[in-house]
Amino acid sequence: MDKLTQAFNFRHACKVFDENKKIPQEEVNYILEAGRKSPSSFGLEPWHFIVVSDNKIKAALKPVCFEQKQITTCSHLVIVLYRKAGQFSLQSDYLRKAVARNLPNNTDIDSACQYFINYSQSLTDGHDLNHWSELQGYIASANMLTAAAYLGIDSCAIGGFEHDKVIEILEQVLPQFNRNDFGITLCLAFGYRKNQQSEQIRWSLDEITTFL
Image 1 (cartoon, rainbow, N blue to C red):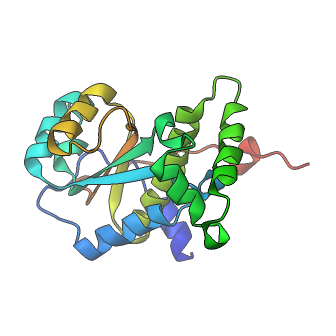
Image 2: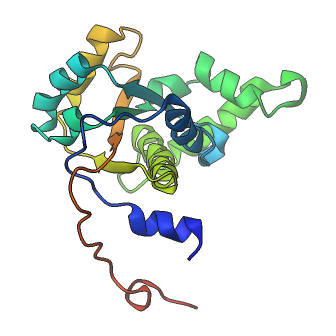
């Protein structure tokens, strides 16, 4: 069995981590690199990763994450933020810098930014720019979970949390990350399992695949 398939089989939603085991920094960086190198729509990478290893901050987050044990038992908690619509205006520093990277000599930035803005205004069926941005974070999150499993590191993707209260805590410790600019896609807990892996249950390939 190849190493990538082993990683897919190894990964599961770890509910309780061994608090005495910490992930080495170089392996934390490896996981974050998998997120950084992830694909995104228009190549805009509308995410930011907050890495929490401070026990006091994790303890403050636990009650607003419905008391889930993963929050305080994990070695590192990665909060995946997405950039809100206000960061994608024509005069947005973020959008202009992101777009300029792909332009020769930074030419015609206004037109390139407007092209994306026109696209964003065409989103329909309940999708808006915030939703578009949030979805990009799921791509980065999935890659980080797989990268961790490749290293033999356990993880759990956590979508159950009180969004505004988590943001409030982040604003207290990192005032530059405020609710007007950022939302939260997922919280990713990383560490080493304390209990035996639960059975991995999936539909068969035939049940979820149609070939045309």
